[in-house]
Length: 348
Image 1 (cartoon, rainbow, N blue to C red):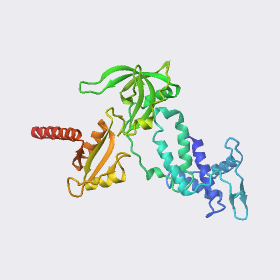
Image 2: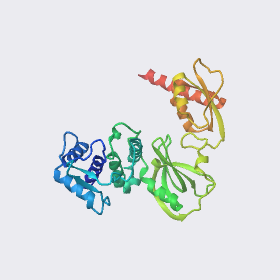
Image 3: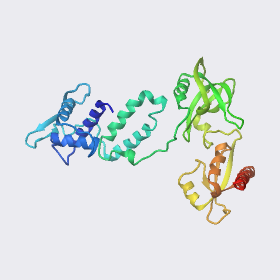
Image 4: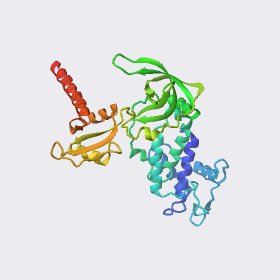
């Protein structure tokens, strides 16, 4: 971390000491110890009194900082204080719960810092993180909150180009690899990009292919040689992202219309589904469950790949009930999986 960043952190710590009504009039030694403990702990580098003196001068007079902090020395108390008791270099009278909310927000932002599209904001995000987490007690929130992160998110290097295409309404051309059993079949595509969407740590672009009447979804991790075309397009105002995904689970918008799917869930899974529904349309059915203690549910969504994958992930804790074609489809998938497992076990 560059020295100027350490200095910014020390300024925040000194500000916190000078505004602490429980320990007023800190001495230079008090400020030195506070900075040292906050930045390095009991073992690590040391901060000198001369560094604190330079910090106090900078907070008072450094024009680039813009603080003009009214720091004064009180000879009676042998310590420093702000002549204006309402002053703080943050200019914000934040309570601890406000700071906790900001810390949570900066942690959310920090997880995107290394994505290529955010490279130009890397330093700014770091400064925000440093300042907020040095702004009061309770720092180190990153030790108490951990976000889900994929080991590596492929395709994020295309986000900046796609964002430019969306904003400037320019056609985007790219190569695309189709995942299938025979291998990665490649083709050349050109789309009018409308929307970037993340789903389970993967990024997708929704756009209208050249000559098509409807939008399609493309996975960024399958794209290559992504480039803006000089051709511009007029956005189809009939496309509305919220409406497009209103009845979808995941990234796919079905083409067969909305269907009410019914299923039953085991007691433990029911608690999870009640606390976090799979979809906004999810509701509990007043129907006799197939097994004692189970709960019946329904939701109105498109028939998509993600729907089946989600339900299959619950294993034996879910029993499909309707429509009949979906029940048969899920049954065949389970039978095939059981047959594959039996074959594997027989070869072991």
